[in-house]
Image (cartoon, rainbow, N blue to C red):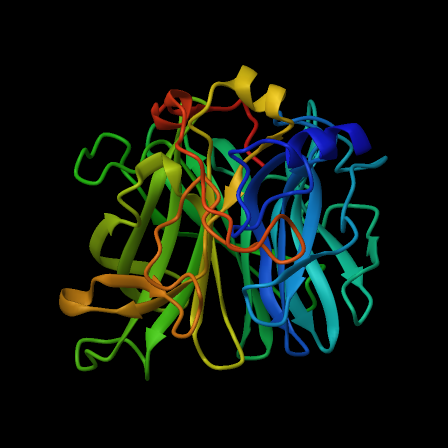
Length: 374
Protein backbone atom coordinates (compact mmCIF):
# COMPACT_ATOMS: atom_id res chain seq x y z
CA UNK A 1 0.00 0.00 0.00
CA UNK A 2 2.76 2.47 0.93
CA UNK A 3 4.64 1.68 -2.30
CA UNK A 4 1.46 2.29 -4.33
CA UNK A 5 0.90 5.64 -2.60
CA UNK A 6 4.51 6.66 -3.27
CA UNK A 7 4.23 5.72 -6.94
CA UNK A 8 0.99 7.68 -7.32
CA UNK A 9 2.46 10.74 -5.60
CA UNK A 10 5.42 10.74 -7.99
CA UNK A 11 3.26 10.88 -11.14
CA UNK A 12 3.54 14.32 -12.77
CA UNK A 13 -0.04 14.06 -14.08
CA UNK A 14 -1.55 13.59 -10.61
CA UNK A 15 -3.88 16.48 -9.63
CA UNK A 16 -3.22 18.69 -6.61
CA UNK A 17 -6.49 20.62 -6.61
CA UNK A 18 -9.15 18.03 -7.37
CA UNK A 19 -10.01 15.34 -4.84
CA UNK A 20 -8.16 12.11 -5.57
CA UNK A 21 -7.71 8.89 -3.61
CA UNK A 22 -4.39 8.30 -1.78
CA UNK A 23 -3.65 5.77 -4.55
CA UNK A 24 -5.43 3.03 -6.46
CA UNK A 25 -8.82 3.39 -8.09
CA UNK A 26 -11.46 6.12 -7.60
CA UNK A 27 -14.86 6.40 -9.23
CA UNK A 28 -18.35 7.61 -8.24
CA UNK A 29 -18.93 10.26 -5.56
CA UNK A 30 -21.03 8.78 -2.74
CA UNK A 31 -22.71 10.15 0.36
CA UNK A 32 -22.00 13.78 -0.52
CA UNK A 33 -23.31 16.10 2.16
CA UNK A 34 -22.70 18.38 5.12
CA UNK A 35 -22.76 17.13 8.71
CA UNK A 36 -22.46 19.48 11.69
CA UNK A 37 -20.97 22.15 9.43
CA UNK A 38 -18.32 19.93 7.80
CA UNK A 39 -18.54 18.74 4.20
CA UNK A 40 -18.16 15.03 3.52
CA UNK A 41 -17.41 13.26 0.26
CA UNK A 42 -17.23 9.48 0.07
CA UNK A 43 -16.20 7.71 -3.12
CA UNK A 44 -15.80 4.31 -4.76
CA UNK A 45 -12.28 3.17 -3.94
CA UNK A 46 -9.94 0.26 -4.59
CA UNK A 47 -6.94 0.76 -2.28
CA UNK A 48 -4.98 -2.12 -3.79
CA UNK A 49 -4.65 -1.21 -7.48
CA UNK A 50 -5.70 1.31 -10.12
CA UNK A 51 -8.40 -1.02 -11.47
CA UNK A 52 -12.11 -1.39 -10.78
CA UNK A 53 -12.54 -4.13 -8.19
CA UNK A 54 -12.51 -4.76 -4.42
CA UNK A 55 -14.62 -1.62 -4.00
CA UNK A 56 -14.52 0.19 -0.66
CA UNK A 57 -15.87 3.59 0.36
CA UNK A 58 -13.04 6.13 0.58
CA UNK A 59 -13.75 9.28 2.57
CA UNK A 60 -12.55 12.89 2.60
CA UNK A 61 -13.94 15.87 4.50
CA UNK A 62 -13.54 19.62 4.36
CA UNK A 63 -14.51 22.81 6.15
CA UNK A 64 -14.65 24.85 2.94
CA UNK A 65 -14.89 22.52 -0.11
CA UNK A 66 -11.30 23.51 -0.96
CA UNK A 67 -8.95 21.92 1.59
CA UNK A 68 -9.70 18.22 1.99
CA UNK A 69 -8.61 15.78 4.69
CA UNK A 70 -8.34 12.05 4.12
CA UNK A 71 -10.51 10.28 6.70
CA UNK A 72 -10.60 6.54 7.50
CA UNK A 73 -12.12 4.22 4.91
CA UNK A 74 -15.83 4.08 5.72
CA UNK A 75 -16.90 0.75 4.22
CA UNK A 76 -15.00 -2.38 3.21
CA UNK A 77 -16.30 -5.60 1.64
CA UNK A 78 -17.00 -8.28 4.22
CA UNK A 79 -18.95 -11.49 4.77
CA UNK A 80 -22.53 -10.97 3.73
CA UNK A 81 -24.36 -8.96 1.07
CA UNK A 82 -21.36 -6.74 0.19
CA UNK A 83 -18.74 -9.50 0.01
CA UNK A 84 -17.78 -8.45 -3.53
CA UNK A 85 -18.00 -4.69 -3.17
CA UNK A 86 -19.58 -1.78 -1.35
CA UNK A 87 -21.07 0.08 -4.30
CA UNK A 88 -22.65 3.52 -4.60
CA UNK A 89 -25.05 5.13 -2.17
CA UNK A 90 -25.98 8.16 -0.09
CA UNK A 91 -25.67 9.70 3.37
CA UNK A 92 -28.88 10.58 5.27
CA UNK A 93 -29.69 11.95 8.74
CA UNK A 94 -31.89 9.43 10.55
CA UNK A 95 -33.01 11.46 13.56
CA UNK A 96 -29.47 12.54 14.38
CA UNK A 97 -27.80 9.26 13.36
CA UNK A 98 -25.65 9.43 10.22
CA UNK A 99 -26.72 6.55 8.00
CA UNK A 100 -25.36 5.25 4.69
CA UNK A 101 -27.68 3.58 2.19
CA UNK A 102 -25.57 1.74 -0.38
CA UNK A 103 -25.58 -1.11 -2.89
CA UNK A 104 -23.94 -4.22 -1.52
CA UNK A 105 -22.58 -6.40 -4.33
CA UNK A 106 -22.32 -10.16 -4.14
CA UNK A 107 -21.32 -12.25 -7.14
CA UNK A 108 -24.14 -14.53 -8.23
CA UNK A 109 -26.74 -12.40 -6.42
CA UNK A 110 -26.15 -8.90 -7.71
CA UNK A 111 -26.66 -5.62 -5.90
CA UNK A 112 -29.03 -5.08 -2.98
CA UNK A 113 -29.68 -2.00 -0.80
CA UNK A 114 -27.74 -2.13 2.49
CA UNK A 115 -27.39 0.12 5.56
CA UNK A 116 -24.53 1.28 7.77
CA UNK A 117 -24.79 3.62 10.77
CA UNK A 118 -21.99 5.92 11.91
CA UNK A 119 -20.72 7.86 14.88
CA UNK A 120 -21.25 11.62 15.19
CA UNK A 121 -17.91 12.36 13.46
CA UNK A 122 -18.63 9.98 10.53
CA UNK A 123 -15.35 8.16 11.12
CA UNK A 124 -16.58 4.76 12.31
CA UNK A 125 -19.39 2.76 10.72
CA UNK A 126 -21.36 -0.36 11.64
CA UNK A 127 -22.91 -2.29 8.77
CA UNK A 128 -26.26 -4.02 9.24
CA UNK A 129 -25.95 -7.73 8.40
CA UNK A 130 -28.74 -8.17 5.83
CA UNK A 131 -30.00 -6.07 2.90
CA UNK A 132 -32.91 -3.80 3.69
CA UNK A 133 -34.43 -4.74 0.33
CA UNK A 134 -33.49 -8.41 -0.11
CA UNK A 135 -35.36 -9.12 -3.35
CA UNK A 136 -35.96 -7.51 -6.72
CA UNK A 137 -39.41 -5.98 -7.23
CA UNK A 138 -42.00 -8.50 -8.47
CA UNK A 139 -43.29 -8.52 -12.01
CA UNK A 140 -40.45 -6.47 -13.49
CA UNK A 141 -37.75 -7.93 -15.74
CA UNK A 142 -34.73 -5.91 -14.61
CA UNK A 143 -31.36 -5.69 -16.33
CA UNK A 144 -29.71 -3.95 -13.35
CA UNK A 145 -30.75 -2.70 -9.89
CA UNK A 146 -28.42 -0.35 -7.98
CA UNK A 147 -27.61 3.17 -6.74
CA UNK A 148 -29.79 5.22 -4.43
CA UNK A 149 -31.44 8.56 -3.81
CA UNK A 150 -33.08 8.77 -0.36
CA UNK A 151 -35.05 11.59 1.26
CA UNK A 152 -37.60 12.10 4.05
CA UNK A 153 -40.92 13.82 3.40
CA UNK A 154 -44.36 13.79 5.06
CA UNK A 155 -43.15 11.61 7.93
CA UNK A 156 -41.72 8.77 5.85
CA UNK A 157 -38.67 7.84 3.81
CA UNK A 158 -38.60 7.68 0.03
CA UNK A 159 -35.96 5.93 -2.08
CA UNK A 160 -35.19 5.85 -5.78
CA UNK A 161 -33.09 3.00 -7.16
CA UNK A 162 -31.52 3.08 -10.61
CA UNK A 163 -32.51 0.25 -12.93
CA UNK A 164 -33.08 -0.94 -16.47
CA UNK A 165 -36.20 -2.74 -17.68
CA UNK A 166 -35.65 -5.35 -20.40
CA UNK A 167 -37.10 -4.33 -23.74
CA UNK A 168 -37.85 -0.79 -22.59
CA UNK A 169 -35.03 1.31 -21.14
CA UNK A 170 -33.61 2.85 -18.01
CA UNK A 171 -35.85 3.40 -15.00
CA UNK A 172 -35.98 5.05 -11.58
CA UNK A 173 -37.84 2.79 -9.13
CA UNK A 174 -39.62 4.26 -6.10
CA UNK A 175 -39.83 2.70 -2.63
CA UNK A 176 -41.24 4.00 0.69
CA UNK A 177 -40.41 3.19 4.30
CA UNK A 178 -41.30 4.30 7.84
CA UNK A 179 -37.82 3.55 9.22
CA UNK A 180 -35.18 3.00 6.47
CA UNK A 181 -35.35 -0.76 7.13
CA UNK A 182 -38.73 -1.93 5.88
CA UNK A 183 -39.45 -0.85 2.32
CA UNK A 184 -42.55 -1.07 0.12
CA UNK A 185 -42.23 -1.00 -3.65
CA UNK A 186 -44.36 1.70 -5.30
CA UNK A 187 -43.24 1.47 -8.93
CA UNK A 188 -41.19 3.39 -11.51
CA UNK A 189 -41.49 7.16 -11.44
CA UNK A 190 -40.22 7.20 -15.03
CA UNK A 191 -39.14 4.66 -17.64
CA UNK A 192 -36.95 5.62 -20.58
CA UNK A 193 -37.01 4.48 -24.18
CA UNK A 194 -33.73 2.91 -25.23
CA UNK A 195 -34.69 3.41 -28.89
CA UNK A 196 -35.26 7.16 -28.57
CA UNK A 197 -32.13 8.80 -29.97
CA UNK A 198 -32.98 12.35 -28.83
CA UNK A 199 -30.59 12.79 -25.87
CA UNK A 200 -30.36 9.02 -25.76
CA UNK A 201 -30.70 7.47 -22.29
CA UNK A 202 -29.69 3.86 -22.94
CA UNK A 203 -30.89 0.65 -21.32
CA UNK A 204 -29.92 1.32 -17.68
CA UNK A 205 -30.01 4.43 -15.48
CA UNK A 206 -27.32 4.63 -12.83
CA UNK A 207 -26.80 7.17 -10.04
CA UNK A 208 -30.36 8.53 -10.02
CA UNK A 209 -30.77 11.80 -8.09
CA UNK A 210 -34.06 13.69 -7.62
CA UNK A 211 -34.32 17.18 -6.12
CA UNK A 212 -36.17 20.46 -6.38
CA UNK A 213 -34.64 23.72 -7.56
CA UNK A 214 -36.30 27.06 -6.97
CA UNK A 215 -38.98 27.98 -4.44
CA UNK A 216 -42.44 26.61 -3.89
CA UNK A 217 -44.16 23.65 -5.53
CA UNK A 218 -43.43 23.02 -9.22
CA UNK A 219 -46.61 23.24 -11.24
CA UNK A 220 -47.97 24.98 -14.31
CA UNK A 221 -48.47 28.21 -12.41
CA UNK A 222 -45.07 28.41 -10.75
CA UNK A 223 -42.13 29.07 -13.03
CA UNK A 224 -39.78 29.62 -10.08
CA UNK A 225 -39.47 25.93 -9.17
CA UNK A 226 -38.88 22.67 -10.97
CA UNK A 227 -38.09 19.10 -10.02
CA UNK A 228 -34.85 17.77 -11.50
CA UNK A 229 -33.96 14.13 -12.15
CA UNK A 230 -30.30 13.27 -12.80
CA UNK A 231 -29.38 9.97 -14.43
CA UNK A 232 -26.15 8.42 -15.69
CA UNK A 233 -26.51 6.46 -18.92
CA UNK A 234 -25.15 2.88 -18.92
CA UNK A 235 -25.57 0.53 -21.88
CA UNK A 236 -23.96 -2.78 -22.84
CA UNK A 237 -21.36 -2.59 -20.04
CA UNK A 238 -20.27 0.95 -21.00
CA UNK A 239 -20.73 4.21 -19.10
CA UNK A 240 -21.78 6.99 -21.48
CA UNK A 241 -22.72 10.37 -19.93
CA UNK A 242 -25.00 12.21 -17.54
CA UNK A 243 -28.48 13.48 -18.43
CA UNK A 244 -30.89 15.69 -16.53
CA UNK A 245 -34.64 15.96 -16.89
CA UNK A 246 -36.68 18.88 -15.58
CA UNK A 247 -40.37 18.52 -14.83
CA UNK A 248 -42.85 17.80 -12.05
CA UNK A 249 -42.75 14.95 -9.52
CA UNK A 250 -46.18 14.39 -7.94
CA UNK A 251 -44.99 11.89 -5.33
CA UNK A 252 -45.34 8.81 -7.52
CA UNK A 253 -44.63 9.81 -11.10
CA UNK A 254 -42.20 12.21 -12.74
CA UNK A 255 -43.61 14.15 -15.68
CA UNK A 256 -40.63 15.36 -17.75
CA UNK A 257 -40.70 18.63 -19.64
CA UNK A 258 -37.09 18.87 -20.88
CA UNK A 259 -34.23 16.37 -21.33
CA UNK A 260 -30.67 17.58 -21.77
CA UNK A 261 -27.03 16.55 -21.38
CA UNK A 262 -25.69 17.30 -17.93
CA UNK A 263 -22.16 18.07 -19.10
CA UNK A 264 -20.63 18.42 -22.56
CA UNK A 265 -17.56 16.53 -21.42
CA UNK A 266 -19.77 13.50 -22.15
CA UNK A 267 -18.28 10.36 -20.59
CA UNK A 268 -15.59 12.42 -18.83
CA UNK A 269 -18.21 13.60 -16.31
CA UNK A 270 -20.24 10.76 -14.86
CA UNK A 271 -22.11 9.45 -11.79
CA UNK A 272 -23.07 12.92 -10.55
CA UNK A 273 -24.50 13.27 -7.04
CA UNK A 274 -25.78 16.40 -5.31
CA UNK A 275 -26.82 17.72 -1.91
CA UNK A 276 -28.27 20.89 -0.35
CA UNK A 277 -25.78 22.53 2.00
CA UNK A 278 -26.47 24.63 5.09
CA UNK A 279 -26.39 27.79 2.97
CA UNK A 280 -29.20 26.43 0.81
CA UNK A 281 -26.99 25.77 -2.24
CA UNK A 282 -27.48 22.69 -4.39
CA UNK A 283 -23.90 21.38 -4.71
CA UNK A 284 -22.91 18.79 -7.32
CA UNK A 285 -19.90 16.48 -7.65
CA UNK A 286 -19.11 14.06 -10.46
CA UNK A 287 -16.50 11.47 -11.34
CA UNK A 288 -14.00 12.40 -14.07
CA UNK A 289 -13.00 9.07 -15.68
CA UNK A 290 -9.61 8.53 -17.22
CA UNK A 291 -8.50 9.10 -20.81
CA UNK A 292 -5.26 7.19 -20.26
CA UNK A 293 -5.01 3.53 -21.18
CA UNK A 294 -5.66 0.96 -18.47
CA UNK A 295 -1.97 0.02 -18.54
CA UNK A 296 -0.93 3.66 -18.01
CA UNK A 297 -3.25 3.95 -15.02
CA UNK A 298 -1.87 0.81 -13.41
CA UNK A 299 1.69 1.97 -14.03
CA UNK A 300 0.96 5.38 -12.46
CA UNK A 301 -0.60 3.76 -9.38
CA UNK A 302 -3.81 5.80 -9.43
CA UNK A 303 -6.95 6.30 -11.50
CA UNK A 304 -9.86 8.73 -11.41
CA UNK A 305 -10.48 12.29 -10.25
CA UNK A 306 -13.41 13.99 -8.58
CA UNK A 307 -14.81 17.11 -10.24
CA UNK A 308 -14.71 20.50 -8.62
CA UNK A 309 -17.94 21.28 -6.76
CA UNK A 310 -20.60 23.05 -8.82
CA UNK A 311 -23.59 25.07 -7.64
CA UNK A 312 -26.74 24.14 -9.55
CA UNK A 313 -29.32 26.80 -10.41
CA UNK A 314 -32.12 27.20 -12.93
CA UNK A 315 -31.19 29.25 -15.95
CA UNK A 316 -33.09 30.50 -18.97
CA UNK A 317 -35.64 28.09 -20.48
CA UNK A 318 -35.36 25.92 -17.35
CA UNK A 319 -31.81 24.99 -18.30
CA UNK A 320 -29.68 23.68 -15.48
CA UNK A 321 -26.73 25.96 -14.76
CA UNK A 322 -23.72 24.45 -12.98
CA UNK A 323 -21.26 27.20 -12.14
CA UNK A 324 -18.39 27.22 -9.67
CA UNK A 325 -19.34 28.10 -6.13
CA UNK A 326 -19.02 31.85 -5.36
CA UNK A 327 -15.75 32.49 -3.55
CA UNK A 328 -14.33 29.05 -4.41
CA UNK A 329 -10.72 29.31 -5.66
CA UNK A 330 -11.68 27.02 -8.55
CA UNK A 331 -14.25 29.52 -9.84
CA UNK A 332 -13.46 30.13 -13.50
CA UNK A 333 -11.31 27.00 -13.81
CA UNK A 334 -12.25 23.99 -15.87
CA UNK A 335 -12.20 20.46 -14.53
CA UNK A 336 -9.02 18.71 -15.61
CA UNK A 337 -7.20 15.45 -15.15
CA UNK A 338 -3.96 17.41 -14.78
CA UNK A 339 -2.84 19.30 -11.67
CA UNK A 340 -4.36 22.77 -11.59
CA UNK A 341 -3.50 24.24 -8.21
CA UNK A 342 -3.12 23.56 -4.48
CA UNK A 343 -4.59 20.34 -3.10
CA UNK A 344 -4.92 20.66 0.66
CA UNK A 345 -2.42 18.35 2.31
CA UNK A 346 -0.98 16.96 -0.94
CA UNK A 347 1.70 18.35 -3.23
CA UNK A 348 3.22 21.77 -3.60
CA UNK A 349 0.70 24.67 -3.54
CA UNK A 350 0.54 26.62 -6.76
CA UNK A 351 2.50 24.14 -8.85
CA UNK A 352 1.43 24.33 -12.47
CA UNK A 353 0.87 21.26 -14.65
CA UNK A 354 3.39 19.94 -17.07
CA UNK A 355 2.14 19.56 -20.63
CA UNK A 356 -0.25 16.63 -20.93
CA UNK A 357 1.08 13.65 -22.81
CA UNK A 358 -0.80 12.26 -25.79
CA UNK A 359 -2.44 9.52 -23.74
CA UNK A 360 -4.23 12.15 -21.66
CA UNK A 361 -5.72 13.66 -24.79
CA UNK A 362 -7.20 10.52 -26.30
CA UNK A 363 -10.88 10.07 -25.41
CA UNK A 364 -12.03 6.52 -24.91
CA UNK A 365 -15.31 5.14 -23.53
CA UNK A 366 -15.02 3.60 -20.08
CA UNK A 367 -15.90 -0.06 -19.96
CA UNK A 368 -16.82 -2.10 -16.91
CA UNK A 369 -17.10 -5.80 -16.54
CA UNK A 370 -20.62 -7.26 -17.09
CA UNK A 371 -22.95 -6.33 -14.25
CA UNK A 372 -20.35 -4.10 -12.63
CA UNK A 373 -20.78 -0.42 -11.97
CA UNK A 374 -19.81 0.83 -8.55
